[in-house]
Amino acid sequence: MSAEERLAELGLTLPEVVAPLAAYVPSVRSGDYVYTSGQLPVVDGKLAATGKVGAEVSPEEARELARICALNALAAAASAAGGLSNIVRIVKVVGFVASDPAFSGQPQVVNGASELLVEVLGEAGKHARSAVGVAVLPLDAPVEVELIAEVR
Image (cartoon, rainbow, N blue to C red; front, top):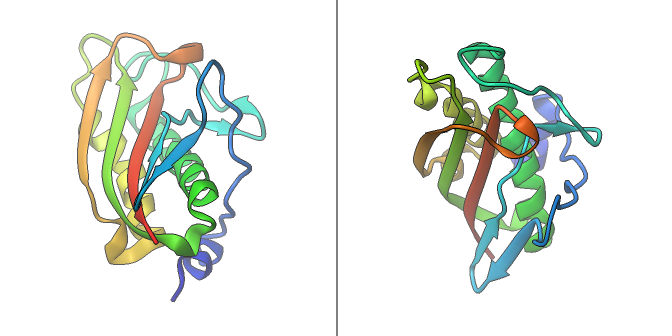
């Protein structure tokens, strides 16, 4: 089954690539790799939630927001690669979680992104990863995800 078919089976479509908030581009292709900029949980041009995970945002909600970030990152990568079918594999994911000082569940939050990538890309969606707790993210977003993809 193709990535496009898996996406449809999940009831998802690749969104429009989110416009940059500052002086950068959503993704860059260099040779056989695409590097995405950090993607926020933006849906239809609006941030889906704000606040710190473990305070204003529950870990479960943050996990769903990480899925949105990963879908936005896939859209940015596919745009630079000439389509989702040109993504060979996800090599690395970095997830940033705006965390309440007492919150230490960053890996479980970023699992939302990792699991979406495997659901869409199968074995090619498995990747190396970092999950990092931070004080604040742009626009007070709870989660941000970036990735590196190998492409054809």
